[in-house]
Structures are given as C-alpha cells and as structure tokens.
Length: 142
Image (cartoon, rainbow, N blue to C red; front, top):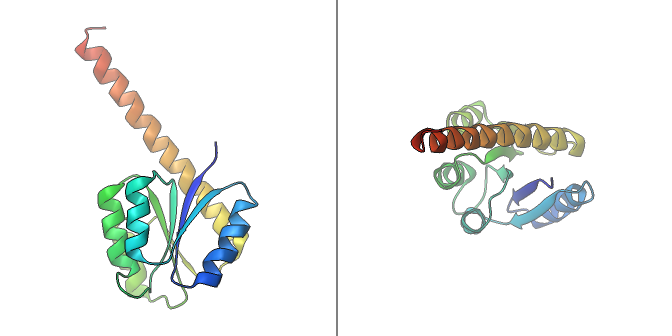
C-alpha cells in the first residue's frame, strides 16, 4: 500500500527537496505552500499523513491543523518548525497533532514518524470497518 502524504510549508525549496526525498522512498506526495492551499487538497484527497509547518504567512499551522482535524479526523498530522516553542508544541498536541519535529529533521526520522502514523491510522480505519460490519450484521439479524 502506498502512503499518501501532504507536505505543507511556505519554504518552496524545502518542500520540493523533502518531497523528492519522500517520493524516492515510494510515498505518494502532494505539496502545498500555505494553509488554504493545504485545506483545498485535504478536501479533495484522503491523505494518510500530513506534514505541516507551524509558522506560515496567512493561516498558520495551528489554525490549519484545527481545520484539517475537522475535515479528516483520522488524518495524522506531524508538525514541523524551525521556531518551535514548548507552548506551540503543547497546543498542537492538544489539537490532535500526531507528533512534533524541529526543522531541519533528518529524512529517516521523518520517514519513521510517517510510517508509525500511517500504521495507527490504518488500525483505526480497520476498527471502524469492523464495527460497521458488526452493526450491519446485527441490523440484519445475522
């Protein structure tokens, strides 16, 4: 199964370089350069993992995270920043961020986080499917 990743950061060179590094590892990567563009893609595609910069012009990462979780509660979001503060990290985690990494982060560490987040999302989706099947069978009296 190919993991679908959305990479959101206002630093174009960073986004393009990281996208290439993830694509060579067989991730399906889409990119956005601001929160609104990211939300448009989240509405259109069911991403497994979203890599989201905290500090962006316009809609920042925290506001974007809130809206992503409203649209796709099961999507796992990894917050990235070069300017992390403890308060921002805590706020992001309270709002449902899966993890929080400082930029620059080593690609292998990010890949491990993506794989771990995807595994948890897949397990949640399977539990939901099983509950739906049980409910359907119960309604039909099976």
